[in-house]
Image (tube, rainbow, N blue to C red):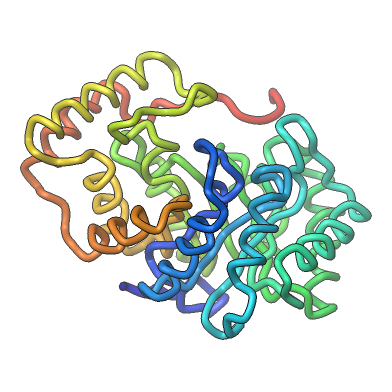
Length: 309
């Protein structure tokens, strides 16, 4: 396992991180016993960063994760969760809800602190409220010893950078999703700016929420039809070459060492073992070139997220 320093936090985090959305059933029903085994398999394999949120599975992900972490030394993992999003259309970035949410998450997770507390999908909030109310509330959380570092998350990179510009050193980590994948590398453009500021960088969903998989995306996936079509074509090409596109997508993402961690949802222990094995191998450059050629017409094609501006 490769480990990278998460910006100015100084945390040494595994390049492959465990994503908690799958524990909440985001990609289909889960067997809780197997999901707990998946967490244990990840820790045994050297993964030490676990990212979750109360939104995932309507708190189920945090609850299952708390059961999985019971009895495991707190020094064996770095734990990240979020505030602000609680349902598909349920957002509350107020200070009062933020403070209560942290306490609720700590209770579900069975810990007295998290290593990283993040504003979840901030593009659905008012930037002024996030800068002047949500982030100061999280600073109080940190002062109380309930979190060590503060971050922001969302899909639109421009929105993240806008809040970073206004909040300055109050933000120590940025997390975006689906923006460092075979089909979309927009996050790489932000690297120089974040590096200069010492901001930690986490990319989640290197398989683009299963766009880059043989199974294909779930029904709720918001990608436009053309993007789905080209990703399916790339998956077929990989199969013809004896390669699973998810494997290639993971290896492609991990090869970028300037992104400190790549979060992958894994609720099945067999998936964890497979991802750990693939993470130790470089991508096949010939197949990679073919896939990038197929995806070139939709490179950085994304979808809207958040309040209209």
